[in-house]
Amino acid sequence: MKLVKIDNFNEAVALFKKIGVDPYGINAMATKTQSINILLSAQSCKVANILKQEMLSLGADAAVARGSVACSIDATDVLIMGTLKQITALTKKIKKQPFGLNLIAEDILALLSSINQNRYILKTSRREIVLGEKTLIMGILNVTPDSFSDGNLFFNQQKAIERGLQMVDEGADIIDIGGESTRPGAKSVPARQEIARVIPIVESLSGKISIPISVDTTKSPVAQAALSAGAEIINDISALGGNKMASVVKKAQAALILMHMRGKPENMQTGNLVYDDLMEEIICYLQKGCRKAFAAGIEKDHLVLDPGIGFGKTHDDNCKIIKNFGVLKSLGLPLMIGTSRKSFIGQITGGTPSDRLEGTAATVAAAIMNGCHIVRVHDVVVMKKIAAMTDAIIHA
Image (cartoon, rainbow, N blue to C red; front, side, top):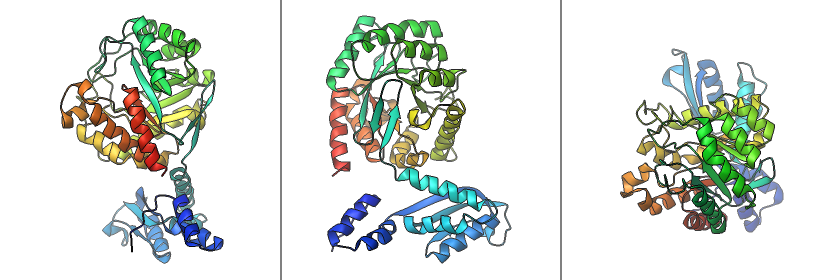
């Protein structure tokens, strides 16, 4: 006798085939192996009671507030609990019902589709990048005098170019160039200054390397200059908070990374760091950024999402994000994380940023195990090995 862990539909199918289950039985039973919990916020008592009764009729359940049955409250959150088969059956039962239940059915089906997607194609102006088969390594190249970990190391243009080429040799899949520090407390620099720092590096590297170049900026003039100089990805920590960024990205057919941040780098760690529901706020914020992108004509297969480790979060928040990273799969887009050498690691392991290699490795492995597709790191050689080993475990 042994306990069997089944993480996804394909693993269930493989086990049933090994047992010798009839093909019809495989299709009927595979969806029973996966339990799913879905939280619907602020539903009317009428809707909540229907959902609960329908789930009970399917042999599953839904948790609602005590006062919802008697409708003594205005609204309640609803936690739907069941197998994939039961929840799919629920959508069939409610899709023609009133009170907005048809829209809930559509949203649930979209969520189920998203969490079962394991492979993505990210399009840039020059290529299609496969995500999901292996974790991609984004190498950090800060051409700033004041970044928290490597500020001033590559401020010299020639040193920056040499470091970019070195990261390619080390196995980086993407180079991310930043000309403005986003460390806590950092002040913004003028666009012309950021352009002067970044563009010569982009121009030089784009003619020497075959991997895509990303530019870390919130400013549309910087993005436009960078894309014209050979960059293919814009890493926007403001999630389209700046004017004209979306139109610049759309016109260039570039890929776009949207990140969650509360506040700005200058004040993000001194403002309100209390979240009613951390992961829900991150998801809602990123959904809003996606809507801005879609409204500008940017297509879904040009987007990547980042929960923004260290950007307006406490040390505990950052750990919770990594632990619960898998819930971000509900957004239906490829995911990136940047934990490299950050202070929350130092809070646990001690040391300066350069002493946080092992702690960074742990966060990278955990994020990949929970569904991350791209890791943004300083230490390319080591983290590529960490990613390769973690990928091997996931695909075993």
